[in-house]
Length: 275
Image 1 (tube, rainbow, N blue to C red):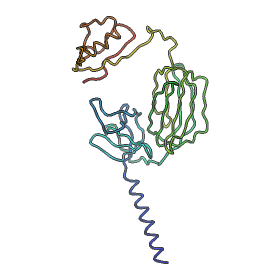
Image 2: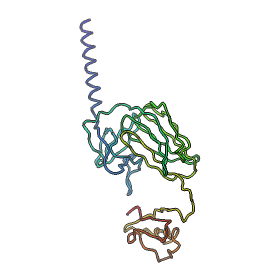
Image 3: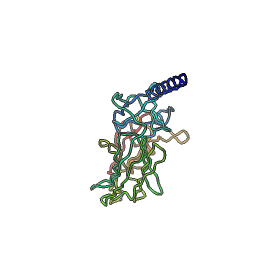
Image 4: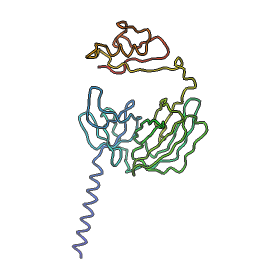
């Protein structure tokens, strides 16, 4: 009986030590820099890896592996992503938990924007997507479990029609924001302390083209004047012809020499990619 007792005590002791070692095999820290991005995998092309999302700074992250330039981040039990090392700041005081609880949700608005506010125990990573037909914004918050008891929707919110949540996994909390208009007009996600805020832009009252600013990606910029292989067209000339009535064949300025093209209030579009 004594031998059995000693064996059980040793087994439990080794189990505790093993669990502590497994739990310590990660690096805790926070996102750093302006709009740090997460990537789905390690694949790359000339524009970098496939982007999952862009994050706010100061978000708690758990590093479980490393490559030359990226950290592998565990977002939740079943979800991982890659964060550039330059966008990570080690925080030895951060004690990560298996999950964090969500609080109540408030939907309100001011004179320009609508807002969805949700309280969290910690600044957690998230991912968002836009959906059409119906128009919705879907936000997944990783590492969070619902403790939401109230959703307060104030009449000052003019663009947001409805907000609801679901627990898609034990540690993945999903917010769905239904919009009144079919067209998305933009949104921004950020933290104010431990409150996650989704800021939604409303549809303009006047949709006349001369009242709108339309940005067009002019394609390849810098020194890369891509010529269409079969027809001999410069890509940037085709794009400028589409949105500038004054741009004639052979009379368009290259993006590498002009940061802004056109002659009206409809467009303010430098080339967004070099190379």
